[in-house]
Length: 374
Image (cartoon, rainbow, N blue to C red; front, top):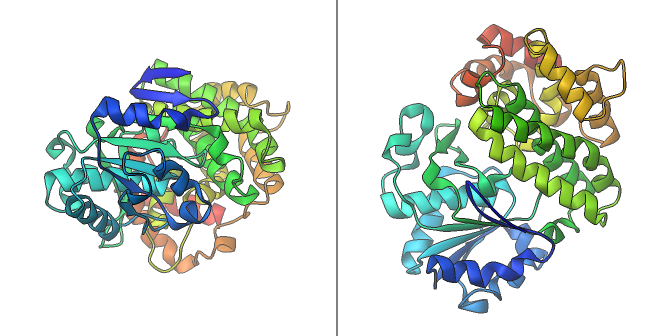
């Protein structure tokens, strides 16, 4: 299946075989492979490198933190320049893909990542960047078709760099790469995809095409995630989860909301490492309750699409789903401390996702949501 929407996408089992053709189409002869050590240890990085012009001699940057940082982006850009690279292949989950986009930006534009942060007015400074081919190995962020890179900055904030120029020039979505993903990571990344669909569908922006994509992404994720977690070899479930992930990011044009504003801030905390998808899962029920009065019709459509049992509210359904997936039930169970919550609430107001939440929250509202999820 070849899809052209935002970018050109190969989507099917075995799609990675098309990587040499995509490299040639973009004129890339010396790509930098950006990945993480887990993907390297799993043998996937070597498999992808073998498809590149230099094979095993392909320059690699694999020092990608689980929450990608400004410092790591600078290191990857330096590696790109030193190796004389002319493009990037991003391989892994959202972290390698977002870091690859940031490195492609810094390698071609210079300056610091702060210069390009969306909330600091940096979007207009971004022009064409080094070409990126993105190959996801998880079904969650959809970053392979997204226009943004969420990064942890030196000052402790987790901010987004956004531009159409950051959308990878090619995406290769091969569900086969997710077959060995452990159940816990399948659940956490899958809840990220489901949250994308729900938040985009209920955002305060009018964009009917993006809304339709978001609704279908939520439908696929809600119906496939438990099967993918229970049996990682279920090819149908793995394919549906990867499609849901991709569709969630395609709907980003409609904006996200309070779940992501809060999870971005929490994910940027220096005191503890918190997984983005798991944070979304834990925060989602409380945000659904906060937005419910303003989104009655939308919640009814989501409940129907997601096969929510009759009489069960959307927030209760998500709480039950989290429990069945063995995800944490609270922020405190993840290691969050109550005395951090005021700071998180205040900083989350600055996140760009706050602007597109169904109901505009105040710092007091954010504190109440955090308390409810604590």
